[in-house]
Amino acid sequence: MNTFGTLFRVATWGESHGSAVGCVVDGCPSNLALALVDVQAELDRRRPGQSSVTTPRAERDRVEILSGVFEGKTIGTPISMIVRNLDADSSKYAGFKDVVRPGQGDFSWRMKFGHVDWRGGGRSSARETVGRVAAGAVAKKLLARFRITSTAFSREIAGIRAEGGLTRDSIKLIDSTAVKTIDRARGRLMEKAILEAKNAGDSVGGIVEVVCSGVPAGLGEPVFGKLSSDLAAALMSIPGAKGVEIGAGFAIARMKGSQSNDQFTLKNGRVATKTNNCGGMLGGISNGMPIMARVAFKPTSSISKSQKTINLKTKAGVEIRVEGRHDPCIVPRAVPVVEAMTNLVMADHGLISGLIPRRL
Image 1 (cartoon, rainbow, N blue to C red):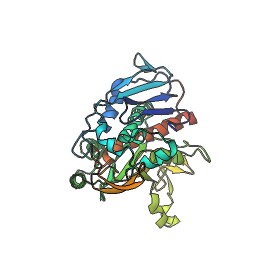
Image 2 (cartoon, rainbow, N blue to C red; image 1 turned 120 degrees about the vertical axis):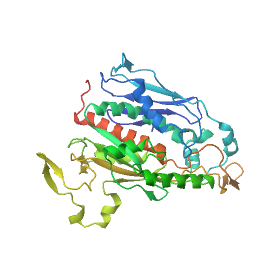
Image 3 (cartoon, rainbow, N blue to C red; image 1 turned 90 degrees about the vertical axis):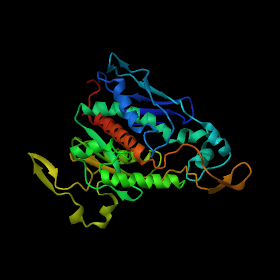
Image 4 (cartoon, rainbow, N blue to C red; image 1 turned 60 degrees about the vertical axis):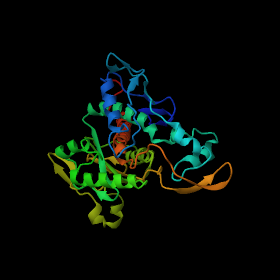
């Protein structure tokens, strides 16, 4: 399944070492001002080679908008975007043609499809998220018209947890730190932990937190079209994601009802809650409070430490060392992807609810 969404639909396409990757966005309302820079700015945030804690693959990730935009505005037709792969090096993967790499999708993809692109992980590579981020940029621009904004950051890396929440000042810190976090001091420790793992031929994982503000009450459908379930599914579809928490998340299982329930109050004449353990959604429908979620990402599977596996052709056990250019931690570059998927869900539900009209 390569298509996501109900009314605001996105199809991503392309393989890691193919000629290009991209997306098609269908269902975006017409008359939305959209410039190349709006999309490029988001792609630059997930671009490889930004620092020593990311892969050195030197892709410029320059986007081209092929359709759906005329005279600087959307025209209601599919928006097709392409990013060409210019720095793919498939030579490092030739030795793995018949070998399944531990932690990767190699084995399961081969069992499902039989014939797969084994270069750089092919379609299962995180390179696929280029299309998600490009599409998310369109959703971000659309949601801004309705004062809905999503902000993601690295909450935890290698067990080192950033302190504090989102403020005007902490938001400014995110893209100025190599690990995209809100805590500069903890960010330096995160960076150190990533580099130590990298130098040891290993990798680390972490948690990305996202907060979506300005979402009105009433988004989401009962029973199987819940905003919470669609958001969880979207975030879990990101490569490397292994868990999603909404609001207080798993910690709520250790609370009593008197602690977990968000009590209602009036703030500036509108109904609000004193706490936000529910993460802005009750019964799967938004309640007007900020939407809050966290995504756990596993350590990068491609590591240069020796690992045991199987050669599918010879049926023999082998040891491999995965050389090449890989992120020692995918969390920093997952930050804009988490934002993008959150924005795509909110744009889709905005259209479903009627909050966003089909023509602006």
